[in-house]
Amino acid sequence: MINSSEILSTLEMIERQHLDIRTITMGISLRDCTRHSAEHTAREILDKIRIAAAGLVRVGEDIEREFGIPIVNKRVAVTPIAEVVAACETDDYVIFAKALDDAAHEVGVDFIGGFTALVQKGFTASDEKLIRSIPDALAATERVCGSVNIASTRAGINMDAVRRMGEIIKACGNNAARLVVFANAVEDNPFMAGAFHGAGEGERVINVGVSGPGVIKTALEQCKGAPFDEVADVIKKTAFRITRVGQLAAREASKRLNVPFGIVDLSLAPTPAVGDSVADILEEMGLERVGTHGTTAALALLNDAVKKGGVMASGHVGGLSGAFIPVSEDAGMIRGAECGSLTLEKLEAMTCVCSVGLDMIAVPGDTGAATIAAIIADEAAIGVVNNKTTAVRLIAPPGLKLGERIDFGGLLGSAPIMNVNAYSSELFIARGGRIPAPLNSLKN
Amino acid sequence: MKSIVTVIGEDRIGIIAAVCTELARLKVNILDISQTVMQTYFTMTMLVDISRCDRSFGELSDALTELGGREGLSIRIQREDIFKAANRI
Picture 1 (cartoon, each protein chain N blue to C red):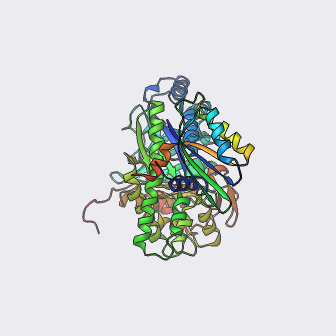
Picture 2 (picture 1 turned 60 degrees about the vertical axis):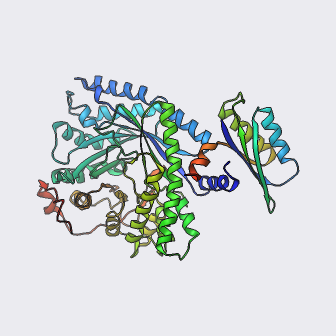
Picture 3 (picture 1 turned 90 degrees about the horizontal axis):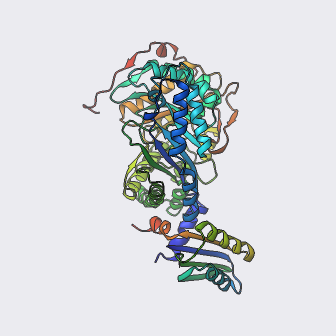
């Protein structure tokens, strides 16, 4: 039998250290929803999701109750809408976003992802329409998340798309918190705002993301001053335990919904709650404040050890799998940004060694579209050259200046406005075209 | 189906009796009990079989939470699998 100390330590992980399942995300293919008329297609989309995800929230709640583990979000990810509705006779894609939002409300999920276009090499007419519709689509909906993939290691960086996304992010205002710009987007990511149901996926799939920064932080408190070999070992063992819980939830959800299990995403997702912070883990390793020198090395160790521990705990691992460093969703990151220890430049360096990118960062409302585009280009270059996923989720809240703060509410948290480089990138971004795919040999 | 009941609270006379009586009423079979008192804190973990219980898991859990409320204890019931998953390879 499981002994008392194992039982009590598991309860402690859940109740004091914020171990939870961040999300059970059901991927649903909408490929069979295409009709000529936009209204008819929107109806098909709504009907399909309504039926396919009908049991998702109930099953999530049952698992929560029976296993005593909180499942913070239940979500749906769908086929990139630009592909589903390409044949429809309409220029305005807001109708499809509304259908997704209606479906999300009906089945009771917290978010629905897939208002998406994949344009790493070029735009189809449908991609163009979708991207143009993003600001209105996000404004007209509450739970819809959008994403655009603008670069990949095989295709290079579509700089026309980069320029366009700088403008779109500006136009979205605070709703940009539900929009992510990717390089090397993955097809089975359960996390928002970037979840979509990729082309290689089946009809339906269950993907799960866990969250447990607090558990790792607490485990590290027991080895103060120990060498890094020991730190890595403690993180691996703890990540194993966390991921096993995620695997259990994924398997149960898959069985009860009769939907194939896809992957467990090994990312350590923080929340704004105190004690649920990735930054706290880095500080526990000996950094006075996150963002100071040594932060990138600490994060590299954390990210690698989490994967090594997690990979053995799960049958299939995928998604983004790494430590997330969203500023607004992590109390320690917010503290670092507010005291000036954590800067945009340091965050960029940190994204070289972890998933997923510049996430939930607020910049001054008067930041130019070209500057935002240039930030996207830098981040995409890191992903493309290093063969990894990177993303940008920036918000330029209209009217807000450096030193002020924006509150997104709920899991999205609140963010201090961070400084951007004042010099112009205008002419660089105006060039457009494509940055060619990098060489994948002669590595140095 | 095997589950784990945990009872935590200030120690006093009759905790085990109260919990066991309620479990018997709910037709839950106790397979194993482990109990300690640290300082004044009482902690008990029980392995139980709920296959003969005619309530849903949710109702069972609610009944135990209610008992906990009445007795000033924290009482939880969870499927055994989560503890196995989190602790065993």
